[in-house]
Length: 546
Image 1 (cartoon, helix red, strand yellow):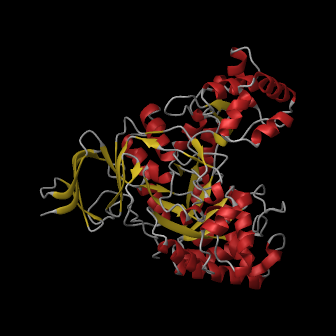
Image 2 (cartoon, rainbow, N blue to C red; image 1 turned 135 degrees about the vertical axis):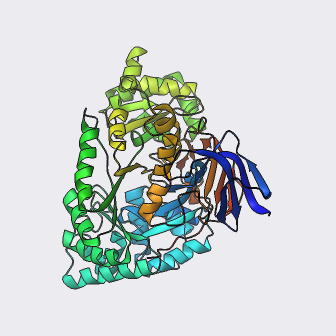
Image 3 (cartoon, rainbow, N blue to C red; image 1 turned 90 degrees about the horizontal axis):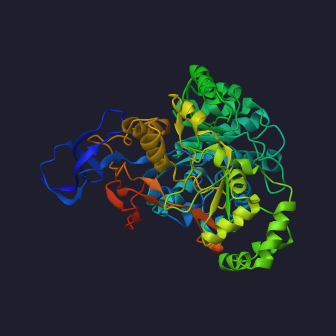
């Protein structure tokens, strides 16, 4: 028998957490048809000897809702083994949307998620009103990866309440209307509902986004529509009481963002809190895989305010390099930096190095200020020197969240949390965490040994697939859809981030490619080879199936 694809002799890491076994895998008509020993030939044969064969990775937290309109390849996550991405997180979505509110929703996404409004308005067709229509539009774009979407609280509230949605409480009738719209959205394919109770997420006028301070009874009313449909509820910024109320109402899956502090013992304490919360229902947390928050460098954001620095901001990278290499200008830049009141502590900032792969794991003693002191410099002088030496490639990572890898590791041992939260498509000129699956493989599995390969892959595949309600993806077994990675666990890593200007209108964003991925297959189509796209766009919109 001839198969479409046969992957030969790989280490099959099936996504269930079971120990890997050596074997083959056959694919036909977009599905896995045989696992173990495959006798028939493949129209395409992939030699996986010495490599791992895994299910495709599932990304539970992206904001690719807009970017998918002009980048159906869905970079950077597609470079890192992701084959399914969840859109519509954090309550901010583009549907439902009345025609008069298009610019309002685009502006909200710009201020909350750092996605340029002009790119949103020009890069999407905006030919929908309800959430099902948005999913139809995404389907017509033929994405390279599978996409699932949640309907967002902010858009639903605007749709029902108009301007009153920002600061006022909903009436009983309005709460019912919102619940009905969420129900209709799920019936049209949304896999769930997302909400946002994080006050720093603002509208352009500085007010917190709609739903931030909504009476929890509003979420309970919506949960009454979500629960019977066996759909997902996602939250950011919600306290445990709100999460508990949602879980007890839906009797279903709740997904929320979480984290840990730098203090000794905080990781275990946060894990213990998760265990207590899990008693109230099917609750799953996610958090960043390493210290994150803001990234800067000569090629992107600049860390100092001042007349000379402001002039530098107006230049392209070539101009900036020329400027910092002029002794007089460099002296002025150093003086202004020394005189400036700091925006954030340099003891939490770390140089990513100039190797092919970035150094995200420097100990706290190797922060930028300590690095400068060791060189007998002010940190601004160190920033300028390293920028000069690397031709502007040097990048510096501010660890605002999850500052301690030790505490984060203690948290990650919990059964109730997944390493994730890459935020792909959002904060595009501020952070680059979309390579999070590669960091799990390179650091948490290979270097730290926190997870075995089998357990780490489970947390990248079948675990998040279950949270999404996907029953045909996440494991390597006959009958499952053929989302597959062939990779080298000894080499997988993230490459250095870099700033490009490939958004509509030339807007900037960070990208980050990968090492160690031989092949990524989506629905039976070879989508990437050696980390580069083949042009195949076989992704599907994964609509809620109840």
